[in-house]
View 1 (cartoon, rainbow, N blue to C red):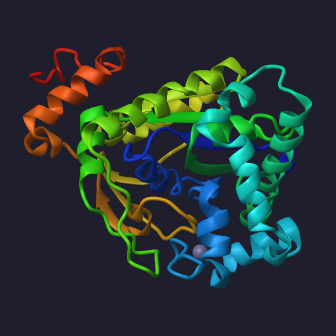
View 2: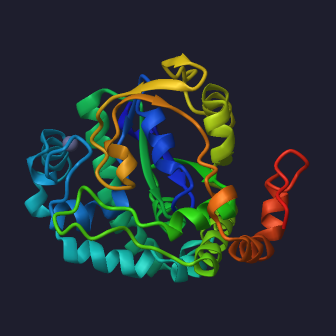
Length: 317
Ligand SMILES: [Zn+2]
Protein backbone atom coordinates (compact mmCIF):
# COMPACT_ATOMS: atom_id res chain seq x y z
CA UNK A 1 0.00 0.00 0.00
CA UNK A 2 1.53 3.33 -1.00
CA UNK A 3 1.30 6.29 1.39
CA UNK A 4 -1.22 7.87 -0.96
CA UNK A 5 -3.64 4.99 -0.36
CA UNK A 6 -3.30 4.81 3.41
CA UNK A 7 -6.00 6.37 5.56
CA UNK A 8 -5.56 9.18 8.03
CA UNK A 9 -7.65 8.63 11.14
CA UNK A 10 -8.38 12.05 12.58
CA UNK A 11 -9.75 12.26 16.14
CA UNK A 12 -12.11 15.23 16.30
CA UNK A 13 -14.07 16.78 19.15
CA UNK A 14 -13.94 19.32 21.94
CA UNK A 15 -11.25 19.19 24.67
CA UNK A 16 -11.53 17.01 27.80
CA UNK A 17 -13.69 14.49 25.97
CA UNK A 18 -11.34 11.50 26.16
CA UNK A 19 -9.44 11.98 22.89
CA UNK A 20 -6.06 11.36 24.55
CA UNK A 21 -7.27 8.15 26.17
CA UNK A 22 -8.56 7.05 22.76
CA UNK A 23 -5.21 7.91 21.19
CA UNK A 24 -3.34 5.91 23.89
CA UNK A 25 -5.52 2.87 23.14
CA UNK A 26 -5.15 3.16 19.37
CA UNK A 27 -1.37 3.36 19.82
CA UNK A 28 -1.48 -0.25 21.05
CA UNK A 29 -2.88 -1.51 17.74
CA UNK A 30 -0.69 -3.14 15.11
CA UNK A 31 -0.43 -1.12 11.89
CA UNK A 32 -1.21 2.16 13.68
CA UNK A 33 1.08 5.07 14.51
CA UNK A 34 -0.23 7.92 16.69
CA UNK A 35 1.24 11.39 16.32
CA UNK A 36 -0.64 13.42 18.95
CA UNK A 37 -2.16 16.83 18.19
CA UNK A 38 -0.21 17.70 15.06
CA UNK A 39 -1.98 21.08 14.89
CA UNK A 40 0.14 22.16 17.87
CA UNK A 41 3.44 20.77 16.53
CA UNK A 42 4.40 24.03 14.83
CA UNK A 43 4.25 26.15 17.99
CA UNK A 44 4.81 23.74 20.87
CA UNK A 45 7.30 21.41 19.17
CA UNK A 46 9.03 23.31 16.40
CA UNK A 47 9.13 26.73 18.05
CA UNK A 48 9.10 26.04 21.82
CA UNK A 49 10.76 22.59 21.88
CA UNK A 50 8.23 21.19 24.36
CA UNK A 51 8.51 17.55 25.38
CA UNK A 52 7.32 14.68 23.22
CA UNK A 53 5.42 11.89 25.02
CA UNK A 54 8.64 9.83 24.91
CA UNK A 55 10.10 12.33 27.39
CA UNK A 56 12.59 14.00 25.03
CA UNK A 57 12.33 17.64 23.97
CA UNK A 58 10.89 17.79 20.44
CA UNK A 59 14.19 18.59 18.72
CA UNK A 60 16.02 15.79 20.61
CA UNK A 61 13.38 13.11 19.90
CA UNK A 62 14.83 10.67 17.35
CA UNK A 63 11.40 9.92 15.86
CA UNK A 64 10.47 13.54 15.22
CA UNK A 65 13.98 14.33 13.96
CA UNK A 66 13.63 11.59 11.36
CA UNK A 67 10.12 12.74 10.44
CA UNK A 68 11.44 16.28 9.89
CA UNK A 69 14.31 14.99 7.80
CA UNK A 70 12.12 12.83 5.55
CA UNK A 71 9.23 15.27 5.30
CA UNK A 72 11.08 18.54 4.75
CA UNK A 73 14.82 17.83 4.61
CA UNK A 74 15.03 18.99 8.25
CA UNK A 75 12.83 21.12 10.52
CA UNK A 76 14.98 24.18 9.85
CA UNK A 77 13.34 24.29 6.42
CA UNK A 78 9.85 24.77 7.92
CA UNK A 79 8.84 28.33 8.75
CA UNK A 80 6.64 28.38 11.89
CA UNK A 81 5.59 31.97 11.12
CA UNK A 82 4.20 30.88 7.76
CA UNK A 83 2.36 27.98 9.42
CA UNK A 84 0.93 30.35 12.05
CA UNK A 85 -0.28 32.67 9.28
CA UNK A 86 -1.80 29.81 7.26
CA UNK A 87 -3.51 28.52 10.38
CA UNK A 88 -4.97 31.96 10.98
CA UNK A 89 -6.23 32.13 7.39
CA UNK A 90 -7.77 28.64 6.97
CA UNK A 91 -7.81 26.83 10.31
CA UNK A 92 -10.07 28.82 12.60
CA UNK A 93 -13.68 28.38 13.64
CA UNK A 94 -14.57 31.63 11.85
CA UNK A 95 -13.09 30.32 8.55
CA UNK A 96 -15.56 27.43 8.39
CA UNK A 97 -17.91 29.38 6.07
CA UNK A 98 -15.03 29.36 3.53
CA UNK A 99 -13.37 25.98 4.20
CA UNK A 100 -16.68 24.14 4.67
CA UNK A 101 -17.89 24.94 1.14
CA UNK A 102 -18.10 22.30 -1.55
CA UNK A 103 -16.80 24.84 -4.07
CA UNK A 104 -14.39 27.11 -2.22
CA UNK A 105 -12.71 30.13 -3.77
CA UNK A 106 -9.35 29.64 -5.55
CA UNK A 107 -7.64 31.48 -2.68
CA UNK A 108 -9.10 29.10 -0.08
CA UNK A 109 -8.10 26.12 -2.23
CA UNK A 110 -4.51 27.39 -2.59
CA UNK A 111 -4.05 28.20 1.11
CA UNK A 112 -5.69 25.03 2.45
CA UNK A 113 -3.56 22.91 0.11
CA UNK A 114 -0.36 24.66 1.14
CA UNK A 115 -1.32 24.18 4.79
CA UNK A 116 -2.44 20.55 4.40
CA UNK A 117 0.68 19.70 2.40
CA UNK A 118 2.76 20.18 5.56
CA UNK A 119 0.56 17.71 7.44
CA UNK A 120 0.56 15.18 4.58
CA UNK A 121 4.37 15.17 4.47
CA UNK A 122 4.43 14.40 8.20
CA UNK A 123 1.87 11.59 7.86
CA UNK A 124 3.75 10.03 4.93
CA UNK A 125 7.09 10.24 6.75
CA UNK A 126 5.61 8.66 9.90
CA UNK A 127 4.23 5.80 7.80
CA UNK A 128 7.53 5.21 6.06
CA UNK A 129 9.52 5.24 9.32
CA UNK A 130 7.20 2.97 11.31
CA UNK A 131 5.72 0.77 8.57
CA UNK A 132 2.25 1.56 9.93
CA UNK A 133 -0.73 1.60 7.59
CA UNK A 134 -2.91 3.99 9.57
CA UNK A 135 -1.75 7.34 10.94
CA UNK A 136 -3.71 8.87 13.83
CA UNK A 137 -3.77 12.65 14.23
CA UNK A 138 -5.64 13.59 17.42
CA UNK A 139 -5.65 17.35 16.78
CA UNK A 140 -9.39 17.40 17.69
CA UNK A 141 -10.03 20.77 16.02
CA UNK A 142 -12.76 20.55 13.39
CA UNK A 143 -11.42 23.55 11.40
CA UNK A 144 -8.12 21.66 11.04
CA UNK A 145 -9.89 18.59 9.69
CA UNK A 146 -11.81 20.81 7.26
CA UNK A 147 -8.55 22.31 5.99
CA UNK A 148 -7.10 18.80 5.56
CA UNK A 149 -10.19 17.77 3.58
CA UNK A 150 -8.98 20.05 0.75
CA UNK A 151 -5.83 17.99 0.20
CA UNK A 152 -6.37 15.82 -2.88
CA UNK A 153 -4.27 12.95 -1.50
CA UNK A 154 -5.04 12.68 2.23
CA UNK A 155 -7.57 9.88 2.77
CA UNK A 156 -9.29 11.56 5.71
CA UNK A 157 -11.63 9.67 8.09
CA UNK A 158 -12.89 11.42 11.21
CA UNK A 159 -13.65 9.73 14.51
CA UNK A 160 -15.66 12.24 16.53
CA UNK A 161 -15.35 11.59 20.26
CA UNK A 162 -17.97 13.18 22.52
CA UNK A 163 -18.54 13.25 26.26
CA UNK A 164 -21.37 14.39 28.53
CA UNK A 165 -21.17 18.21 28.62
CA UNK A 166 -21.41 18.18 32.44
CA UNK A 167 -18.34 15.97 32.79
CA UNK A 168 -16.54 18.20 30.30
CA UNK A 169 -17.52 21.37 32.20
CA UNK A 170 -16.28 19.90 35.47
CA UNK A 171 -12.98 18.90 33.87
CA UNK A 172 -12.40 22.42 32.49
CA UNK A 173 -13.03 23.88 35.98
CA UNK A 174 -10.06 22.00 37.45
CA UNK A 175 -6.40 23.06 37.46
CA UNK A 176 -4.23 20.71 35.41
CA UNK A 177 -0.45 21.14 35.13
CA UNK A 178 1.40 20.75 31.84
CA UNK A 179 4.44 18.53 32.41
CA UNK A 180 5.71 19.13 28.86
CA UNK A 181 6.07 22.88 29.37
CA UNK A 182 9.28 24.41 30.69
CA UNK A 183 7.45 27.35 32.25
CA UNK A 184 5.10 25.17 34.34
CA UNK A 185 1.98 27.19 33.51
CA UNK A 186 -1.20 25.12 34.01
CA UNK A 187 -3.71 24.24 31.28
CA UNK A 188 -6.46 26.68 30.40
CA UNK A 189 -9.55 26.72 32.68
CA UNK A 190 -13.12 27.67 31.74
CA UNK A 191 -16.31 28.34 33.70
CA UNK A 192 -19.38 26.15 33.00
CA UNK A 193 -21.09 28.55 30.57
CA UNK A 194 -17.94 29.12 28.50
CA UNK A 195 -17.07 25.43 28.50
CA UNK A 196 -20.55 24.53 27.30
CA UNK A 197 -20.64 27.22 24.61
CA UNK A 198 -17.37 25.82 23.27
CA UNK A 199 -18.63 22.24 23.70
CA UNK A 200 -21.63 23.08 21.52
CA UNK A 201 -19.73 24.92 18.80
CA UNK A 202 -16.75 22.54 18.90
CA UNK A 203 -18.98 19.49 18.49
CA UNK A 204 -21.67 20.76 16.16
CA UNK A 205 -19.29 22.07 13.51
CA UNK A 206 -18.59 18.44 12.52
CA UNK A 207 -21.64 18.89 10.31
CA UNK A 208 -19.41 20.89 7.99
CA UNK A 209 -17.22 17.80 7.54
CA UNK A 210 -20.23 15.70 6.65
CA UNK A 211 -21.27 18.42 4.20
CA UNK A 212 -17.91 18.03 2.46
CA UNK A 213 -18.39 14.26 2.25
CA UNK A 214 -15.75 13.30 4.83
CA UNK A 215 -16.43 9.87 6.42
CA UNK A 216 -17.44 10.60 10.00
CA UNK A 217 -18.36 8.44 12.99
CA UNK A 218 -19.31 9.49 16.51
CA UNK A 219 -18.03 7.67 19.59
CA UNK A 220 -19.07 8.40 23.18
CA UNK A 221 -16.23 8.52 25.73
CA UNK A 222 -18.51 6.74 28.20
CA UNK A 223 -18.98 3.81 25.76
CA UNK A 224 -15.24 3.68 25.02
CA UNK A 225 -14.28 3.16 28.66
CA UNK A 226 -17.20 0.79 29.22
CA UNK A 227 -16.44 -1.46 26.22
CA UNK A 228 -13.16 -0.41 24.58
CA UNK A 229 -12.73 -3.34 22.21
CA UNK A 230 -16.30 -3.20 20.88
CA UNK A 231 -16.24 0.59 20.55
CA UNK A 232 -13.01 0.64 18.56
CA UNK A 233 -14.03 -2.31 16.37
CA UNK A 234 -17.37 -0.72 15.61
CA UNK A 235 -15.77 2.63 14.68
CA UNK A 236 -13.27 0.80 12.47
CA UNK A 237 -16.05 -0.91 10.53
CA UNK A 238 -18.12 2.24 10.20
CA UNK A 239 -15.17 4.22 8.86
CA UNK A 240 -14.16 1.46 6.44
CA UNK A 241 -10.67 1.22 7.91
CA UNK A 242 -8.53 -1.76 6.86
CA UNK A 243 -8.08 -4.79 9.11
CA UNK A 244 -9.82 -5.81 12.32
CA UNK A 245 -8.42 -3.94 15.33
CA UNK A 246 -7.63 -6.01 18.41
CA UNK A 247 -6.73 -4.06 21.50
CA UNK A 248 -4.28 -6.04 23.67
CA UNK A 249 -6.63 -5.94 26.67
CA UNK A 250 -5.51 -7.90 29.75
CA UNK A 251 -9.16 -8.08 30.78
CA UNK A 252 -12.23 -6.13 29.68
CA UNK A 253 -11.00 -2.85 31.19
CA UNK A 254 -7.25 -3.26 31.74
CA UNK A 255 -4.48 -2.55 29.29
CA UNK A 256 -0.71 -1.98 29.34
CA UNK A 257 0.13 1.37 27.73
CA UNK A 258 3.53 1.88 26.11
CA UNK A 259 5.42 5.11 25.38
CA UNK A 260 4.53 6.94 22.18
CA UNK A 261 5.83 9.98 20.31
CA UNK A 262 2.58 11.92 20.70
CA UNK A 263 3.80 15.46 20.04
CA UNK A 264 1.20 17.51 21.93
CA UNK A 265 -2.04 17.10 23.83
CA UNK A 266 -3.39 16.27 27.26
CA UNK A 267 -0.77 15.27 29.90
CA UNK A 268 -2.45 11.85 29.99
CA UNK A 269 -0.36 10.98 26.92
CA UNK A 270 2.71 10.64 29.20
CA UNK A 271 1.02 7.79 31.04
CA UNK A 272 2.43 4.31 30.52
CA UNK A 273 2.07 0.94 32.21
CA UNK A 274 -0.95 -0.94 33.51
CA UNK A 275 -4.07 1.18 33.19
CA UNK A 276 -7.62 0.40 34.23
CA UNK A 277 -10.26 2.15 32.16
CA UNK A 278 -13.08 3.67 34.17
CA UNK A 279 -15.34 6.59 33.31
CA UNK A 280 -14.41 9.73 35.23
CA UNK A 281 -17.79 10.54 36.76
CA UNK A 282 -16.56 12.79 39.57
CA UNK A 283 -18.72 15.60 38.15
CA UNK A 284 -21.83 13.82 39.47
CA UNK A 285 -20.74 14.53 43.04
CA UNK A 286 -18.50 17.55 42.55
CA UNK A 287 -20.08 19.82 39.93
CA UNK A 288 -22.17 22.35 41.90
CA UNK A 289 -25.92 21.92 41.33
CA UNK A 290 -26.25 25.47 39.98
CA UNK A 291 -23.54 24.79 37.38
CA UNK A 292 -25.03 21.43 36.47
CA UNK A 293 -28.43 23.02 35.82
CA UNK A 294 -26.87 25.70 33.64
CA UNK A 295 -24.86 23.20 31.57
CA UNK A 296 -27.83 20.84 31.20
CA UNK A 297 -30.10 23.68 30.06
CA UNK A 298 -27.57 25.02 27.54
CA UNK A 299 -26.82 21.64 25.98
CA UNK A 300 -30.15 19.88 26.52
CA UNK A 301 -31.11 19.07 22.89
CA UNK A 302 -27.67 17.66 22.09
CA UNK A 303 -27.44 15.70 25.36
CA UNK A 304 -30.77 14.13 24.53
CA UNK A 305 -29.82 13.37 20.93
CA UNK A 306 -26.62 11.64 22.03
CA UNK A 307 -28.40 9.53 24.65
CA UNK A 308 -27.15 11.27 27.77
CA UNK A 309 -30.63 11.85 29.15
CA UNK A 310 -32.11 8.40 28.67
CA UNK A 311 -33.44 6.29 31.53
CA UNK A 312 -30.07 4.73 32.32
CA UNK A 313 -28.04 7.89 32.52
CA UNK A 314 -30.68 10.46 33.41
CA UNK A 315 -29.49 13.02 35.91
CA UNK A 316 -31.70 15.16 38.11
CA UNK A 317 -31.76 18.58 36.46
ZN1 LIG B 1 9.45 11.30 20.97
